[in-house]
Length: 364
Ligand SMILES: Cc1cc2nc3c(=O)[nH]c(=O)nc-3n(C[C@H](O)[C@H](O)[C@H](O)COP(=O)(O)O)c2cc1C
Image (tube, rainbow, N blue to C red; front, side, top):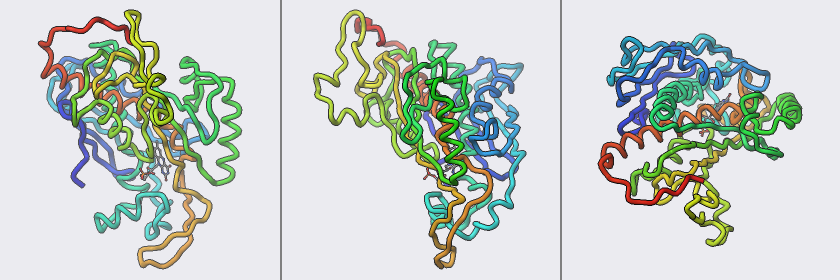
């Protein structure tokens, strides 16, 4: 595997498997002087964690971050920041039965085909356990973006199967286990999830992730366009099947007169562009929508083949998320923050001396 790093000036590398001794990351290119302590990671890692409610996998990980390098006397030093999280609640025996079978919809078949060898325990490297380290790295990016630019990154679940929020209240999102923006629908979601779990099936979901306060100018046309790199970052998250920026696929049926975001000295009249024009941030909120497929590990029997090619029926037991999208908002936030910080540094490197020549158009 030769592609476990992303970002140009802020470069993040993750390593580790679901049931290995530990997972970790190296964050290189982080500016010096940022206050950083192990406690800084607790909040976001807890938001991503399993086992907090009956609606997620019941794996209970401590998710304690050890800072191995890059921090001295509580501040980043500009050298590589290495973070480590030990795996404390792996139950590998759950995977013994399916070690020689390919779960339909999972990465078992492609990993074995590509590498000729596979760590079946908890999905190995293809497990979403890896996203713990994205969230940890994202904590550093969020901190820097907030301190330097007042940028805020937030996310919510904006659809579960066919259910959409009746109203959109960001203040409700962190007060329920579904990151759901309509507090009045939480009971309905609980009932939906309970029935889903009982049925043994899984559901897909959509996550809306947004960055507020991004200044105009970030993004590197043409191959490093901000929207292109955000889309790639989101698509690199496990189980993601679609990414939309702004109006996304709805643009297909919009007229130009409807889609364009009219400008006045008071600001933009709408934000169908999702805060990005020509691959460069416009100063409007950056709006991204991410589609997560339904979990493939099901206890409902499904047809597959084993290593020898014989037809078998696979049944996945063990601990799984019935709706992986419900755990994804902190991961999407982290990926957006990491892309933005990388672009802030890249913009600074080339364009810090460019005087502002455009009038100020308030960001939506
Ligand atoms: C937060 C999160 C949790 C996940 N939990 C599970 C799980 O419990 N069981 C499972 O089979 N897949 C789970 N997945 C999805 C798999 O990791 C993913 O489907 C697999 O690696 C194959 O990759 P692909 O779906 O991107 O093709 C999860 C994904 C995310 C983002």
